Image (tube, rainbow, N blue to C red; front, side, top):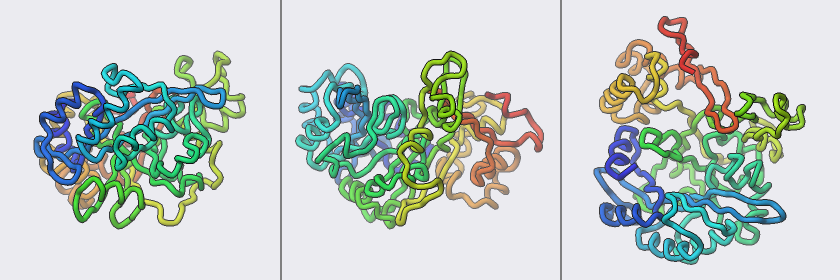
Length: 390
């Protein structure tokens, strides 16, 4: 996850603007200052890839008799603003301890500290529904943004939906109509870049223009989000990993949210939590909602088509050949006409890409930290039984 590999993978993925991540860590921040070259208002360049200064911060605090644990994304207008934020946050905790620092302050205090140091910065609750470290998490979150931020709630203009939820799930809460729904990859390795993303059409790529497009939810500039199928996320269903128990919300509720094997509390997943707070029926779409498109990462598609595992040499070589030939993963999965896929990518890989695009999938939902499993039904066309990969 250094700049060299981030830039290389961004090109393969088709990512035009990539967050740096972890600007609060002193060593990484020094590297960013040494290597990044200004390439626009709040935009930097390295290795042919443009970067935005970003980071993630974990806050743990007690409020209303409960321990709260929430992760926040921070988008920063410039390296100079990032330096001021780092000086302010270093008074609140040890920024060198981890790439994502943990600060023992309320989220509201973090918001004020960041905006006090850099008024143009943006603070966005990260992966808003995951059970353990999120603004709406079942184990440590809140029932509303107002409960968390009080009179400062107006400064929160977006939330990140996270891998285990998608826009339709969030549309069920009328309280979220005033905020933008954004999606980012939450990558811990270069190959995971772009598994979620935002697509923009901006007259000029700059920090203020980008943030304004999000804040105003302008469909002419903020075009759509790229989404994981939420069932593939690690916390979509309820469950208990130690007992290999996974349940949909209705079954969990019928069992008092306790594991049927050991009797301990289940980890209540994202779908359950959304249903608990929702005031709209499933399928509701608010007026002016930003569209979305759901994808399976190309490496996973290739792996299933070949009967191999993601990350193997054979899969990677096929992946690299395809993205270099068609101008990136997003161009292939989102833009390439179906007839061209059929003509230019014959065989199981091309058919698998088309099945993903059409949503012809079988999905086993994730739970309690275990990723869900997406199966592309190709057995009838010959080749290995793909379910054996799981």
